[in-house]
Length: 320
Image (cartoon, rainbow, N blue to C red; front, side):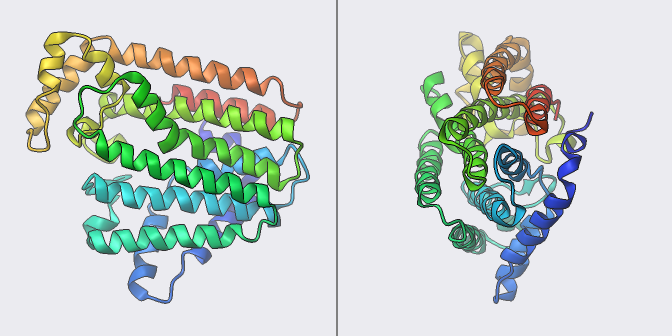
């Protein structure tokens, strides 16, 4: 079953969120408006809003309240992508030109900042101080994650613990908070929203590890960017760290720099695939996935719980 079919019962609410996203990114500046809409129209799984809505189903579900959380978190995710593309000098995202490629770095940074600001403005409609504290802490962690990724570019001496801490900050924490804030907006009791946070964290870790595996196992058409692009950009991911345990492969990988040609990257991709690092990475992803499902078993039984379980399983097994 396709991912979107699993939560098709949310379609009417997701339409409201999509409309709200488009309305929220509107700007008086024609250029800023055009750039923001360019990113929005590039699409995306909208997985964070889906988690917000499903978490809200454990409490007093009111789409008019919960949509503000869902839209805000998706905007924060979008803004972080715009900034990522500047840092990584990325030309493509989801198979389409990035804002920095279509315009320039300055326009991209202003657009990302604008989308961030609109997200925070929207969250003021959520009249729960605790929710704002959680979001503020999350933004701090996201920024630290961004800085660490820049600092660790082409750093082949980093360890797996450093990588796991980075993907927690870059990816897992926003998925975790999507689950938690969706529940808080629906007045869910503390024990449940904390469990939903942990579920989201484990799913987010699994999700990012799979993403990092797919960078080596998928095609350029599936990825919307060249295979092995993370490594080429200096982002050292789990498959690379595991493959470098073989000294011969390590010698090849540590020579990769921005100027390395595609032919050499292709050869290294083959070596990583042959090393067993892909299979090891998938096993680690599975460990996080099993932890997520274990936490889910402790939550009250409802349709949302079954859907969260189905989504977690398909995320952990996706091929692209």
